[in-house]
Amino acid sequence: MAGNGERWPDRAEWAGKIYSAGWRASEGGTRQVIEPASGHVLAEVGVASPADVAQAGVRAARAAGDWAAAFPSDRAEILLRASSALREHRDTFRDWIVRESAGVPAKGDYEIIAALAQLTHAVGLVSLPRGEVLAAQAPGGTSLAWRVPLGVVGVINPWNAPLLFAMRALAPALALGNAVLLKPDPLTPVSGGVLVARLFEDAGLPDGVLHVLPGGAETGQAVAADPHVAMVSFTGSTEAGRAVARVAGEGLKRVSLELGGKNSLVVLEDADVAAAALAGAVSTFGYQGQACVAAGRHLVHADLVEAYTDALVGHARSMRVGDPRVEGVTVGPVISARQADRVERIVDASVAGGARVLTGGRRDGLFYPPTVLDHIDRAMPVFTEEIFGPVAPVLSFHSEAEAVEIANDTAYGLTAAVHSGSVPRATAVAGQLRTGMVHINDVSAKDAANAPFGGMGISGNGSRIGGTASLEEFTQWRWMTAPGPV
Ligand code: NAD
Image 1 (tube, rainbow, N blue to C red):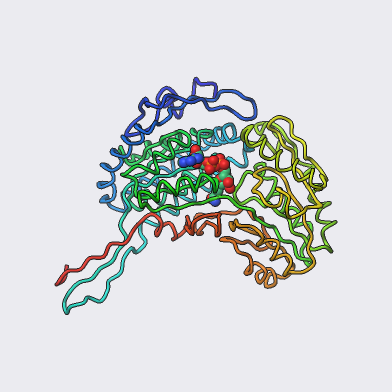
Image 2 (cartoon, helix red, strand yellow):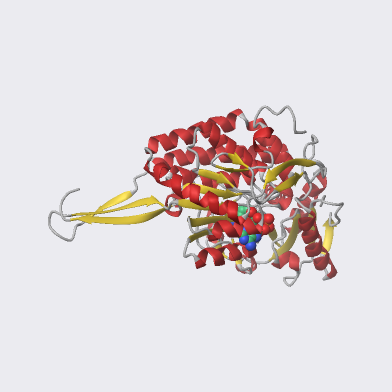
């Protein structure tokens, strides 16, 4: 990735540019992409200014009509070709995900597999029935209602799963006949933007249907405000989600918000403690805890808490921290100094308030080791805030009711996991948790292309992405009547 000799994608084509009906220079200048593990400059991409976004909006609106009118099978064919191109270039995708987002290669593979599933699932969306024949109000008349594309969809994404989050919005939006303005995070514009544009270019997507507009909050605001954008699909923090919703609300646009979480992994006293601790370790330490669906609270029955905590500490200590490209490393650096500062602040303030560090708890630059804390008080930031780092606060409880009460003691409501030897019992507890997703005897961090992903409370605005929910999200109703048959 030194800059020369790359077969695909040809760097000379995209370096320093944005993608908007072809690769072009931007008014917003350029921005370097830095590898978190080494500090090396990996690339330079174009930054889309508000004026670039406005031009992209015009181009997208122009292209959207023909794309919406294309045969569904032609749209499906392009998605299938994008899927083949992703398989063909999977090593390139993995390398970029590893280097840009600082995940281990298995994280890159996971994103690729999940992105492929999104494409496959979107092909299926193309053929779903989309309408209803209604009883007409006059004899012999016609009354039809069906879903039509929205037009231009703006997609604003974070850095933590750049390829997967791009694809989970793009694939259904395109399949259902929309054009898309994609704004990747400035930290991961290549795996979350440039490579995605190249895939669809290779797949033969008509010019102007997809635009990739790297940039920060200003670019995101311009996408949300653009008069041609009918809907904004946002994934990121609750704070930025609010800012996007304010702007989009002013334009009376549809907004889909997939936001943060403070997710509990609940371990009842009849659980398999080893399996629960492994699920807990994966849910909190995987990809350095930088997932909206990471477990941010480990709630363990008092009878098991010692055994569970010992096992969790064992997993934490067995994980090797370092450059994710080095074999055997399972925990890379957190994405940025800002993120490392945040994790440090949350842990240090909690320790100052009486939390006990059982392992970890001290950073080395961007490298934050898997950390287990107990003696947790509910006023501590480690309990109240989304951490987004490899930190597991462990709390004990004495009854199911207490476990449910602690788990629901948050304004977030994204996901949860419940562990028990009895699946019906775990299911009953799960039913009392106020979350959009819940998993029995499993990790908290799951997603599937055919499932409606999303949260309650401040984890979202009631929207869901994935499965047939995407059909609702990325289309709108039209009702038509005629006095006779049509
Ligand atoms: P962030 O909200 O700072 O950034 C996300 C995206 O929004 C980026 O593209 C950023 O440039 C853009 N942005 C930031 N401020 C903006 C503004 N005022 N107007 C328009 N766009 C703006 O997110 P982050 O902190 O980098 O990412 C982590 C957060 O994302 C966590 O809270 C995590 O839980 C959440 N997340 C949620 C999901 C989900 O599906 N629910 C998935 C992954 C991450």
